[in-house]
Amino acid sequence: MKRLPMRKIREVLRLKFEHNLSERKIARSCNISRSTVKDYLARFSVSELSWPLPDTLD
View: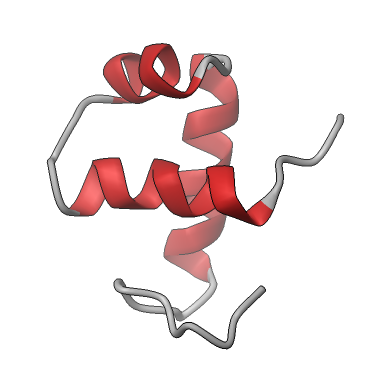
């Protein structure tokens, strides 16, 4: 599986937490698969990070 750039991952998280979009809408907006969106959201939920992400995280 090819990894997304951090910029795109931040965009996925921003669309989810700031705009409360569905996985389908996020996938369409970012031009990635819905399963990729689901995977990154799942990884975020177990990471113990909070939104917004610190600027130092890259």
